[in-house]
Length: 468
Image (cartoon, rainbow, N blue to C red; front, side):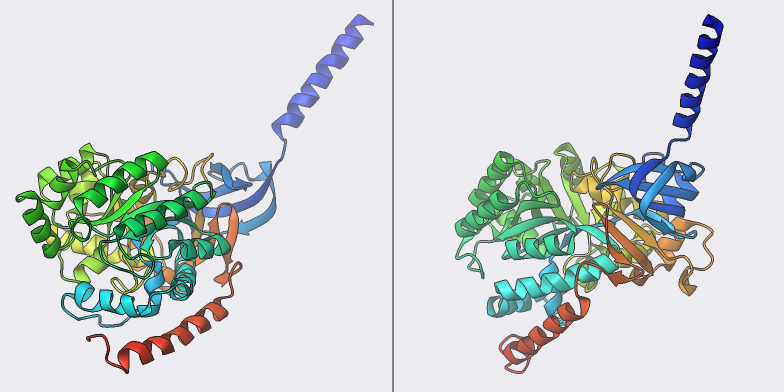
């Protein structure tokens, strides 16, 4: 009798063990049959891989051999398409979509054209309309997170929340009167109010955005630095971008560079993300690394404005936190990071006179995990790894411009268009499927932007109130 009981217990244990070995895990979203670019530390690539998502997080990234172990509420069969982390745009001014293609070749454009234009037309409505349009463009181009600097940033936040994206949103502070503040102190207070309203939002990180060192006083920059530490929020700023900036800061500081000046006043901190960073020396780069500053590299805007080519490759190779940005839609004109890839790779080859410089894998790193590092968000986004937030895109490899794919990194950098993005997923939620937006009315957004464009024509172009 004892032997029979022992045998029964043994058989039961074996049965339970077998059952657990083949247990099926319930997940919310499963992407299968994918060429998975994980962008993890080892740059693992799975040719027939899968990504499993539960709630808003990734729970598995594998070679696909364990496909039968998952059962999903929603399944996307990638059919060999590239599955990768969502792109991160480290610097833009999203609401300026409504001004795109205006005065593209005007010299000294920022001071001669853009500032006067904004003084005429920036309003809550303009910011909302432009942000909606830009959000649509970015989602359709595979951007899942972006860092923005503009006015009425709470209006941008509402549009981001509605469409379901992730964003770092900086309220602009500048020393002269603008649409939402009469002076820098009012701008700081607006930013504080915005930060206090959004500090606990799951997908929106509020931030301070002093326009630049030369358009703010030392006192303002110091105050923002201290407040950013108090609230533990980012500071987004244009840094080392122009000759005008170099001259003003040199006069103010006794010959120092903008980076040296910012270090001297205590404004270089891990909270800071500097956009452009073109005019920097080796010692400036060392200071940026020493203070753990993030850098947003905006190739197309920099070369279009003839300001120069940032030593981004050196910064990347030196281990700085650097990611790709587009700048605003009046600067680079398109705000999908994928449009930067080709130029970033080729221009750095040209300026370094080295065909092997800036290989595609580095470009993709700067668009994903590198950009996440620049925003100090690499623990949450930027790579496909268990435990990270489920920000994922699927890139079509069947489009004529993508056939054939021998090297997925090369195909993305040298062949892909933003329109090759097929599906966009943020926080585990599908925002675009088969090129169709699921969380926004694209036509209504476009129509409203076109209607606002009529106002722009009447106010600026036909009246001739702003120089062209």
